Length: 353
Image: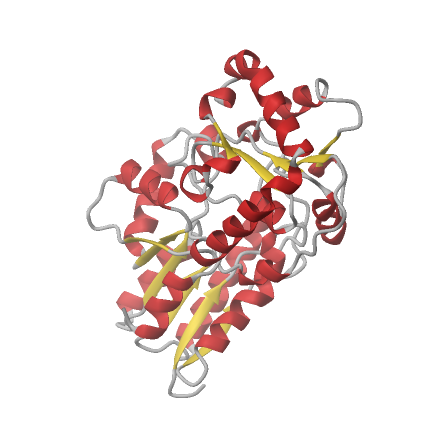
């Protein structure tokens, strides 16, 4: 170890079919580039041999993630015991929903080694449409999330909509909330649009809050020759999924829960028009060129009432795809700069603000 302060990245287990697989390498490399000469960068990982399959409809494996975090906790504790953590070090949790944050703070304060803790919030019980919000109603989870948020020095969110939802739910003035784009700079150069086909994709997880049943019902009423694909049902590799995006004309969302929306951004980068409801994070991120009225898919009943309008909009996008190229370029530039580059986090870490 040198005399430089260290940025300790407490990562989230990598799922190769999701962005966490790319974060495993990109985020540490990004921090090393920007911290060269001023900070050391170390990653605190868990074991690789945990269950890889995600719990159906979820972001990760509910059992495997706790094996991973428990191993991280042991390593953090040994780092304190070995005197490797110094006053002024930063800990960045790529997923703030991590119980080791409480134990980290416990050791920091009792050992009188002041550190800064950063947590990137993806979702939680405070969102009624998230897994934690739908399946757990007991008071302990809100109490736990409040404790996490109060322990973290910088609670980071990728969209203003998510930050507002979080703050409105807790209402504590002592919770420090900030917005930064997620560390996904690599996405902007990942796609090379191919010759387009009349392919429409549902790129989301199959979960109640994503409303895949609306997409499947729409598919039955679209013109012959339109190919509608639920990506998660195809068992695609990451490269196969990207190739499909590059050949598609449209990605469709009827989400009731979305704090950022990576798949729609990927679609836009690949030259597929993102068709999104005017709600959630989409409301602030997307121009009117790509948003449809929220009411159209707020429930199954409202969907049936507005189904013809959705079909007409889809046909407009597919048949006049080339008309939207200029707007897509403008959109992807904005999204890259404001939502898929972690400029706010870098400013705090490397400019001391």
